[in-house]
Image (cartoon, rainbow, N blue to C red; front, top):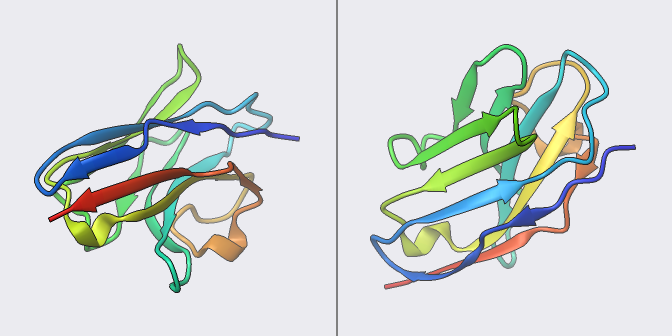
Length: 124
């Protein structure tokens, strides 16, 4: 069982930055995907960014390309999402998720483990 814990959310004005963190309790597979998803009120959970833990490939939603960066720190066993130039449309609950196999860039239904989420609010 993998437990995930997000942190780093908050309220910022448009144009500001936040860095989200996700600390899994452990990795149990060499093929391991981790991703960030977000969900705005009344909307479906959407993928934001993802990466292969041991492969290095990263993926981004078109809406965040050039503004968000997903990264990992293997020494600290932590996943990050650096969010710059935030827009009101980025407001939502942000979730960290993990899966053992298959493609990383996929919908939320294909991810197995989830954190509780951290709220990001961007005001105009």
